[in-house]
Image (cartoon, rainbow, N blue to C red; front, side, top):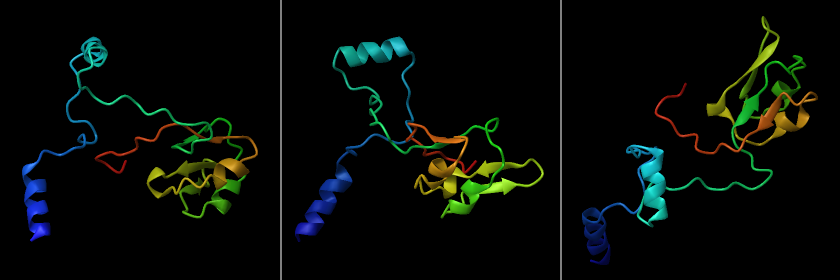
Length: 124
């Protein structure tokens, strides 16, 4: 009987979280800041990330020397070497954010960014 009551309460209550990705953006940045300053609820502020955070991997194509070290150490096979171009292709959807590719790159062509909001409606 207790679980049925809790189920009904949850069905009739509004969600406690924001929809993600945000469906409704403010009309302007000025109105958004005014709402935040006034203490009214608005879209949540970005979360501050600590130093050393492992977010999305950024690939600097111009720095890459085509050594293939990153492809050898990637456990998720998110880094693929393109023979014709002698460059790599990084697949974010496969990445485990382990940092092996970033650590081994001799010319620092791969680096972590502070991006963590990576959800999207498309795979591309």
